[in-house]
Image (cartoon, rainbow, N blue to C red; front, side):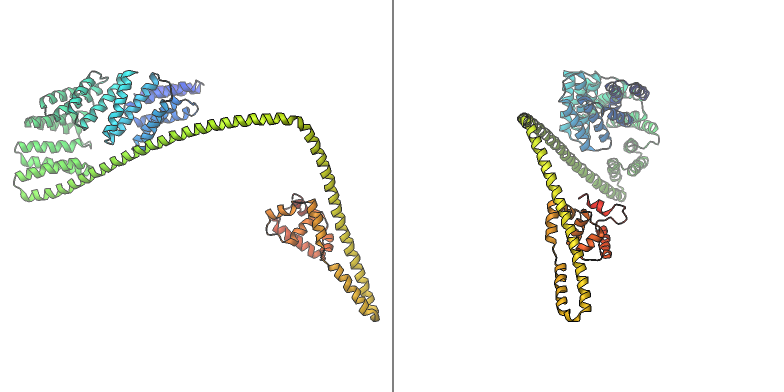
Length: 560
């Protein structure tokens, strides 16, 4: 199988490299993955599944999307993620419902039913498992009629019925299995399960016949040991104690030192049989060995069974002190088994809850899809109406377009002229202020000289000087602010938005720099020395985060 899979994948990758159609590559990968998943070789299938998922991203095909979800369900089940497994498998089945029915679609749905039922069976959710298996059987028999899938469905149904003690159905189903076997492995499972069913019904002679037939189709030592263990139990039930001991020895010989639960079970069984043959010391020795192996391996149920048989044997031998010690051990292990059963029941309830949550999530997702589809239809209708309205409006406005363009051009020209006029007025007003300040300063200096030379006129001259100084020092920012905001209405608001910590004086300094006034002009207008004006510029650069930058302050402010 692995060699065939490797060759097939090599052909698939060759097809991709040669530019073959991606769906053909996916079909080849699918033909590799399916038999691996059917035979529970999930680890071997994993790298091919990864390749399949990567290639399927390029192909928007619902069928391959469903198969990808089916594969993801197997991978999640391998990790014992029950909720995620159910979600992927249910989404895969839901995806198939949107496709036209054909053999490929039906066959994949049967595989999904089979995988989902096996997942439920593992969690002991028997009613859900039975429903899935029966859905698969019905679909397979009505459509593709695949004997390979039918065998797996029947075999899982057989395991399910044995777990629920449906003896009559088991016999009929087992006979149907035997009519549909594909391989020796399948024959082994069929005969073994039918034999177990007859064993539980205490039809021991019939069970022996089936176990003998199943043994003929065994291939692995584990399979042989399993069948021989059942045969030993059957012979013990028939009172064939010597023959049963020989069979137990054969089981132990097949197993060797391999660690599995069959070995301690067989040792305990051999001890019980030897007790019937009055070989009590040997019997206790084998039972103790089986209990010890089961305890080390963590097989609680087997350890519990061994301790129960040991207690019965010690009591019958009237070894009451040993019986008391064994009873204490048995009680402790039995409590552990009961706790484990309680935990398993809780896990089953948790699995039921997870399943309900998965169904609820899928129902909500489906509802959301319907809502999205309805919303899409409403939006599409609204968009169409809007487009029709827009087209109508555009057609109505086409005749006015040239007029609006002409009006806009005229308005832009008028606004440009007005803006230019205001700018010139503002510049002239600033220059007038400069001249006025220079004139007043000059006159004050002259009057000061006269006041120093003519003491007789001292009081009058000082009064004049005082008047001029008051005139010079009178704050008259209103005219400047008015003209500036008329020319640059958004300058202050934009600057405050980016630098809210600027003071009123700093904002006014920014306005002077916006008008490209020199430091000397700014110093004269603000009645400060040029050095103070330079310091104010430096502080302004810090507040505008221009320290360390080569950008000119005037250039920076011209952006606002």
